Image (cartoon, rainbow, N blue to C red; front, side, top):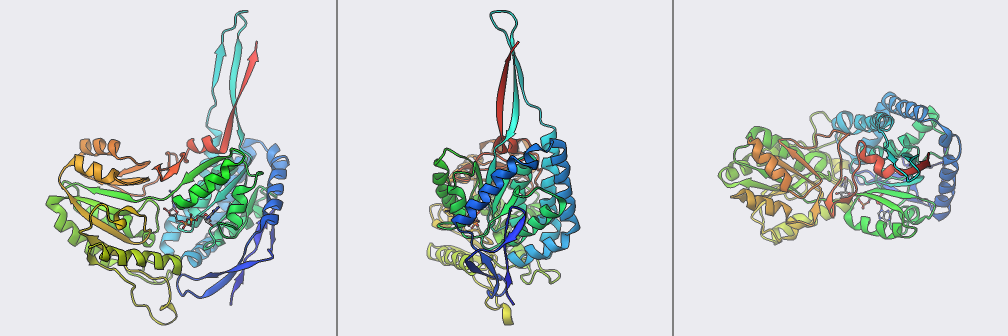
Length: 485
Ligand code: NAD
């Protein structure tokens, strides 16, 4: 039986005149009909969001607003199982990942940013004047206005709340466009917002597709004051063109081709565990994941053998089965894309250490979007598999001989999102971390996130930083008041 979704506009659920099919990644069967918001519905939503800014939401004190954000987090926690279920059905990823990471961290995004905005000071300057009386300057922060929030499918709730949390804490109204593959948790959050008393029009969700559809209609709309986007670099370029009309602000978290750097003096047990997670967690569909690993030559062969064991230890299956730690890819389209890179790797001359295909699955799951964790060696640095983001559970391993060489190899990419360095030599870790051109570097860890720290990419991996006080740079506008005394 198929489920029918609705839009969430101005505090109410509503249908659209057209819909599209959504399929389960586990079976590739149609499970739902998702509405596609047209320009008229986008227009209606923008009007509702603008009205909210000058209604009770705009008048609310910061204390009351932040208290409401805590209520949102509490209600997500109360409805924890609903969120886990919804996200699991959309992504097919193991229940344990939803329960331990994606849903609780989503709730935390409302708590943390509510606390951050209350504790950030603004600045003040005294200015001497010729008459001796002087002037006093002080800054105030005001919300940006209506923020378009365009989201991907790989960690839908976590990545969406990472933007909506600070946006609302700062007093904006949002129009969220979840990925066409994963609309469920954004819509469920609509119920939460309504039930805890967030005023109508403050949080809106419009489902639909991207180009020539809802995503484009939102980003092109002149009533949207700023756009925050997470997704592919190519989509970022299209949204940047839309945002140029009306000189509207953007914050972008984009693709990556992240390098892992493993020195011979690393703790190999910890390294295999950490690199294994960074390559294969969420079936490799993590923007911060590692698709290239450079290993110092003396331990290269041992590293290859041990990462092979690690990859082969992943148990692929249904999200609800116990002991399963790898689900399918998000869709058939994405599975075909990843498989095309698996074929390309062999054409480009790779040695397949493990994987390279689709695991056999039984019965109704046979046509699901399953994929094997895959390791390659032997590719030259200019191979496409070494340069293009694949976004699957796959990694290429290359030996290196010196610090300078590995820094050059890690930096030889148009992307600059994250890197992970493994060494027990702390001086070396500091030295190399400064030289790798990325927004986020982990040493002897991966995906260890402190929400107060700046998050974002260098080069083609993004524009701007979000996280902690840095989110305020995007979600508020600083204004100066100058008073002649
Ligand atoms: P995508 O760019 O295909 O889609 C993301 C969103 O943009 C979707 O909601 C889509 O409907 C919308 N969209 C597509 N074209 C549009 C257009 N022309 N105008 C407006 N909206 C449009 O990305 P995806 O496949 O959903 O996600 C995977 C990508 O996201 C990978 O490249 C990954 O690296 C990246 N990502 C980056 C981060 C980060 O923090 N840097 C985090 C997660 C994912």
